[in-house]
Length: 481
Image 1 (cartoon, rainbow, N blue to C red):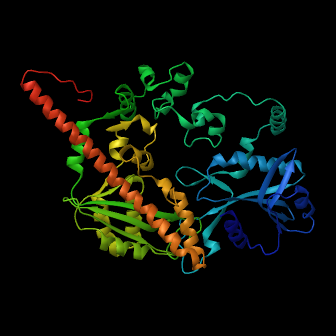
Image 2: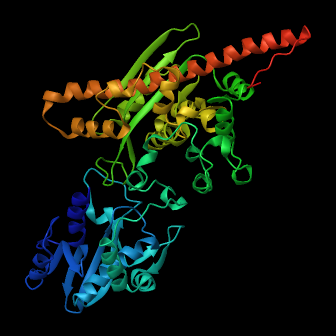
Image 3: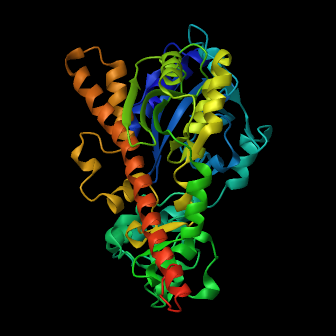
C-alpha cells in the first residue's frame, strides 16, 4: 500500500523526476543525491543511529519543504512526535527546513470512472481535531513535542549493552491492542490455565492481583473487580467447575429474539485505502463473499453462497436478496460490528435496494450477545469470545485447522490473489478454499446455537424434576439454578 500511495502522491505533488530511496539504503546515498535532485522520495537519513524515512523532500530557493505521507483521512496531533524525530534528524544534518506539510487521503472524495490523484489527496500544514476541523500547525505541534533527543539515544545505546531486564507487566501492555512484543515478554502466557486470573476481561487490576499471588479467578479480590456481567460469569464459571450459564437470561433471549427459519449469515470483505472502483471512497468496504445456512423448524438445512471478483457489490446484493427467505431471524456472529454495518453501506450505495436491505438489517440477531452479555462462559474460553474459540466447546471434532484457510485475513489475501491474478490455473482451488472457510463460519454458528439450546433443554428437564421434588417435599440442589 505504501508504494501505491507514494506513487499517487507523486502525481498530486506534480513530481516527475526525483531520487527514489529504497528499503535498506545506505543513508549516504540520499545525501549524495541532494545536489542533483529537486525532489527526494522515500529518502533514508540517519543521525547518531536514529534512522528515518522522509516521504517527500523538496528543494526550493527558500530552503527545504518536507511532506509527510499519512495513509488515513485526518491526521491527529499524536503523529507529531514521530514527525518531530524526523525533523530533528534533518536539522542535525544541516537541512534548513522552512515548510512542513502532511499529505493525507480526502475523506470526501468519491471515485469516478478514473482515479483522480488531485482529488484523492489533501495537502495540509495542520493537524485535525476530533471534530475533523483543522487544528494546530505541524510546525507548532512539532515544536511542542521537542525533547532532548540525544540523551534519549545515548540511554538507549547504553541499555543495549546491559542484560535484558525482567519484563514488568502493566495495563499499557494490553491497552487498546496487545503490544506486538507481549508474547516475547511473557512467553508463559501463551497457554494460560483456563481459570487464570489473567483471563479476567476488562480488568485493570488483574496484573496487580497476579503479582500478589492471586492466580485464579476464584482468588479475585472483590474490591478490585469492576463488576461487569462478563467478569461475574467468569468467576462463577470457575467456582462451578468450569462453566456458568444464566439459564433464565438465555431462555428469554432464545425465546424472544429468534424466529424460524434461522438464517445464519456471514460476510467476507476487503478494504482499500485507494478506492479501486467507481463510486467508492477511500477505506470503503467491498463485500465479496457470503455464506448462508438456512435452518427450518423441522431441522431441514440448506446452504447458499456467493463469491465474486472486482466490484461485485451489485451482484452480491441481488444474490443475497434472492437467497434470503422473506421471514425468519438473520443470525450473524458480531453482527452489530460487521454485517449490520455492511448492510447499511450497501443500502446507501444502492438506494433502489435500500428498503429490502434494511429489512434484513432489522431482522438481524447477534449470536455473540449471550456470550458478551455474560449469559454463558466456559473457562476454556480463556477470556476470548470469537467463534473459533466457541466452536470446540460444542463440537470437539470440528476445526478450522483442517481447512487451507484458517483466518479472516488469510481469506482476504487469497481473495486478492483471485481478484488480481490473471493466472487462472489456481482460481478454482482458491474459490473452493474461500467457500469452505466462509461456509464453516455459518455452520459453526449452527453448532453453537444448537449447543446453547441443548444445554437449556437439559436444564429445563432438571428444573422440572426440581419443581416436582419440591412439590413432593424434597430438595434438590442445582448449582446454576
